[in-house]
Length: 96
Image (cartoon, rainbow, N blue to C red; front, side, top):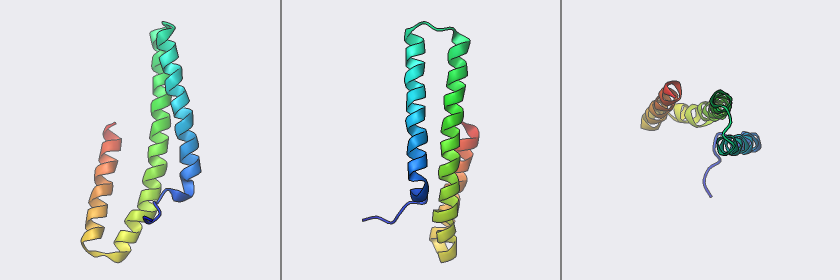
C-alpha cells in the first residue's frame, strides 16, 4: 500500500467538486447540442474553468502542506525535487 497523499483528508470534498464539474461539462455538451447562444455557453465554460481552478488550489495547498513540507523536513535531494515540482505546478496553473 502506498503512503497517503496530501489530499487524502480532502478526498471526499475533491471528488464531490469533480462530480459537480463533470455535470457542468455534460451541461455544456447539451447546450451545444441544443444550439444555445454562444455567450451563454462561454459563461458556463468560464464557470467550469473556475471550478477546476478551485480544485487545483485545494490539491496544491494539500501538496504543499503535506508532500513538500515533509520533503523539506527530510532535506536533501528530495526536498529540492519536491520544491521544483511544486514550482513547476504553480507555473502551469498560473499560465492556464
